[in-house]
Length: 348
Ligand SMILES: [Mn+2]
Image (tube, rainbow, N blue to C red):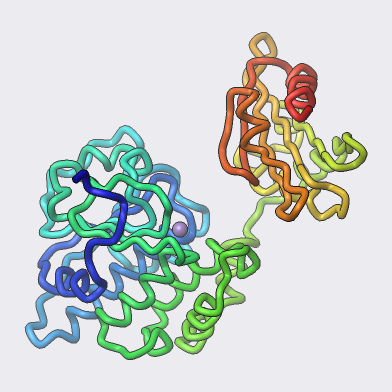
């Protein structure tokens, strides 16, 4: 029978395996987000703390490796933890740790250039994840809890076990902070449908452990450059409503970026803004990319949940794109005007 994407080891066994390893590399998915950064930092710190308190006193060279662009808040939360970031084309070290732990993914495609490094080491690799899909052959030991809102929810229990405390409320603040980071960002700061009583109890425990949650919010969510707000003003100025007010459309041209000094990544989150209008069920952002003689338009789409949900995955599939039911996108080789026309056709 082929191996399936499911749990095949308890947290106890995983903790014992980690305790026994003398060298550990902790990995996560490409372009790490709050949960990926938080999970890796918490685990490396918990491993280091567990070695200091172990009777043998063996120092543990555990470190976190990343690939792809790092989030802007990374330097503000990484402290003295041993980390290394690789570029997409960098060759990875031939280093052979006794154990590899991957958190927040178990998909070869999500590991990007780390995949070739993991492949020959899969027999000594552990995956801890909360996603519905993954490749079972990435790791011989797996703990996958798809009911967890964030991988940091699972890691809260593991870090407590590794450091020998009864509750996450007793974790060192340096471990509690990155766990809270993952929990908060994967739940949209505790407002998505994945928030459960267990999520709130863990969050409460982590605040009890000393997490400065308001400071963390500032670090992660309030570090925009003025150029981003200037670009947001352009996006809002372009806002139009169609389909009897149900569909909101915003457009950004290359000139908007040039004149405000904003970068492509500054549009993050813009597409969600029009959803604050009561009648709006779907919001679209069209961004002009590429040179004038060969225009490309990137479309991002978000829909509101509820009984009248519009499946934006189905809409963008008609345009050669896709994604999730409530968040999807497409890329068309045409002008914004042409892309808008084809997009509205796809809604019909
Ligand atoms: Mn996650």
